[in-house]
Image 1: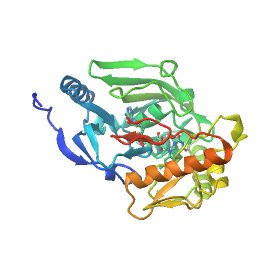
Image 2: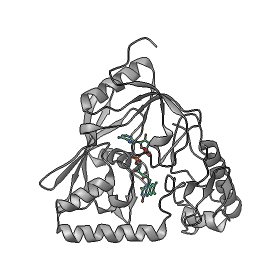
Image 3: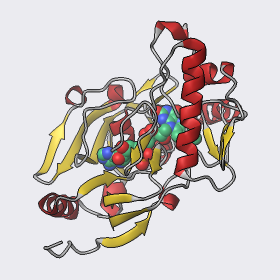
Length: 305
Ligand SMILES: Cc1cc2nc3c(=O)[nH]c(=O)nc-3n(C[C@H](O)[C@H](O)[C@H](O)COP(=O)(O)OP(=O)(O)OC[C@H]3O[C@@H](n4cnc5c(N)ncnc54)[C@H](O)[C@@H]3O)c2cc1C
């Protein structure tokens, strides 16, 4: 390694605790930039040194390889995780937590981001993943994002983000530094009541207080699925409660993997492979992973970062 890294860049940083499933090894390099200038500087350094970049938001859809990530993991902080409003516009740093943004928007009498209350990720992770819940469309309220790369910042509208089901066209090294949402005025009490009812619906449908990354596989559009969700197919294929090592498919929601007994990422991947194999054998449907992998570990049916 030739050039000295920018200030604040650390070595050998454990990543498991930055993910909701709590598995995986360290990153070779780690940084927590708090403003756009230092983010761009870090991206420029990584590019010049040929170091891979991996973003970590809330780690709520992220599986880190047990051998870790041989690159720089970046988590946004400070100004890049702030939540502000001006009139009907909500501006978030890419590292701002979506449930906090939804709750703050409600307090400011702004409606449109309610679906974010149940998505335990960041604004940046939500844009990259085109996150959605209960029919709330991110693209409907998203005005623009500032995307940081080694070359600087460029502003993109939702029409230029290539949104499709749980997908955007953002590549590695393209970081959502800020996002602006155009919301509608509403009554704070009514918006808060909607948030409370959404939380209640979620509590009934999904396990709470567990180490998981949410939906493991995307819902298939294969006609052989006959409209069933990934969870329904996994359940019908006998995967509810199925275990490999410290990981199992949840008893409450078969498309959720739980790390309930000190699982490794290898356990999770082996469990995913077995669930996928069973669904394919029973229904002929190839499930595609929703969870993103950081490091050299290929999820079954997907590709590593
Ligand atoms: C209990 C639970 C419930 C969930 N429910 C839902 C749901 O209802 N709907 C839904 O869509 N998802 C759901 N998820 C999944 C997850 O919360 C979303 O995919 C979320 O958008 C991920 O955001 P994150 O910040 O945690 O991203 P991470 O998991 O940290 O990363 C996910 C991907 O985004 C990239 N990324 C992160 N930050 C940035 C950034 N600033 N710029 C560019 N790329 C970035 C990462 O590199 C990675 O490729 C759930 C997860 C859990 C654990």
